[in-house]
Image 1: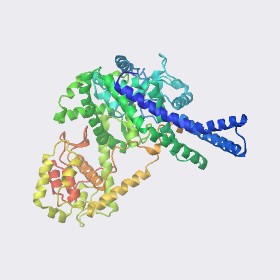
Image 2: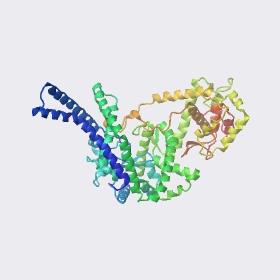
Image 3: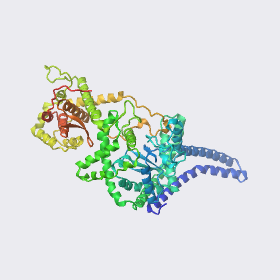
Image 4: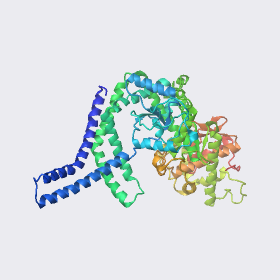
Length: 626
């Protein structure tokens, strides 16, 4: 244990947690101790009479019940498997340079090296204890059930490198079999975007305070306190699991009550213990790359912003179509490079790209990126654990044609199906013949509200045109919508034709989701080995359900994009920060969204018609839809 003040405070809090454990044990043993005293007194003839005999038998029965209850609680706490973070295990054979960097860092900090390394599709890093016997039992079951063709390659031995293979995440080639001996040191979990965006020196500086936490974690008192708290938390989860019989529910209900009572008693001490561990790790890490860590923290915030934008704007549309981008971590580099080009606050960050990236520390960065991308789709969208006919990877160069074009045409086709269900004519003029296929003009004519447009007046329309022309390249729909909410003459879009069409789209999407096939269960994985319940996926949903106005605006925009591609030579494109984008003459059409919102919310088609005329788009022409 180090001499840091935080380490001493963490140890004192750990002792407080252990004292609570000792008091609970003393309460369980107290009736047995009293029964032993009474039985000894009766055997020596010191107490006699019927009253003492009745008391002796009553206390003995109470002691047996208390010991049985304590044994059940202790058994559940000991056997309950604490939750593990979903990660991609990285063996030393798959990343020898990364392991070497972490061990050198641990030597400089004079702390034990982490037992293994794993990656998570998030912008964070931490240490995770995976020494519970249940984790090793699950790993041995998987190893025993693996086919002989999956035998690991020959190489060096070492249990520490394989501790993370107990994770049920996607494995990386080069791993070795799981050891039956649980390691003493925790596993280092690293955010996968850090490896692609950060340089080697920046990654070392960011990991320094994390690796320094292995020192306090190795102290016996802190390790025991953590095991106790994690066991109680796992016992609460076991007691809350559904699908049990009446007797099991009753027994586990009592176990859960005791576990929650103990957790409430040690909650404050456990929280202060973790704060002390973090403070001690930060204090020790100050001696290593302190100046570089200050600069690297800027990259952490930037990586988080780019990663969030990439997931919500780029990956989410593909996930909804049953495709998952297989190079998300490589995509975050492109997104952050684009951000540094647009944002003055990020100027100079792209110049770092000439230095060695941290992903060079991996033997097969492409395979690691693919595994992390699949795990991200599972966590943030609830996709299947394996690729299949309805869940296939997509490369970035294929994204515009495979995702953007298909998404727009599917949305446009859905919009016209809803119009057909509402009985909307394909031609605005009842005397004119219906066109041979769906047209953009049909949508514009249906959403046009002459009365609402007239009430807005020409001044408001000119303001809309000016705002659309002055919109920056990366202006998103949310910012446009928030600005428009301040207008006094804005009416509720849930009324009239827009409201009916939005309700129809919501119902159509709900029917499509209900008719979607059930997600297949992962092969070769028993329920006991699963890290999470598939019914709880996604664990971290990216966006709340879209409103009817948002759905309608998305579908109208998709219809406009299809018309531009079919009649004006536009092409689908990928914007790393804003997702699917329309390219006109090689330039992104950034002024389309405000004009679509004017049509959807105000029933005024003039700004959109003017834009269509300027770009040479013909709304009366039939379109090719899926």
